[in-house]
Image (cartoon, rainbow, N blue to C red; front, side, top):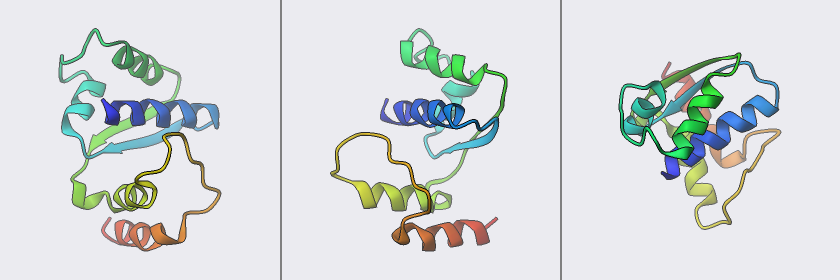
Length: 109
């Protein structure tokens, strides 16, 4: 459920910022299956219904599952903010601690 809330918040935030084309990557296989309709799990869950509604907006969202090892930026940010209050954090520039992970992920493409 935590991953689904993060996906909901990311989609809502991206839409409100005006993004109309994005790739959403998650290392949670079941969450990616739920969002793409491959899994029938939680089909009646209100959060899943809202996420699927967000995905139906007039925009291009590609959802894909990636391995944890290919998600260094997310892991870096999670470690950086572990133990802080729950909420949305927006960056104008990446935190210094995440730059190395960004470069590693970029060069592994």
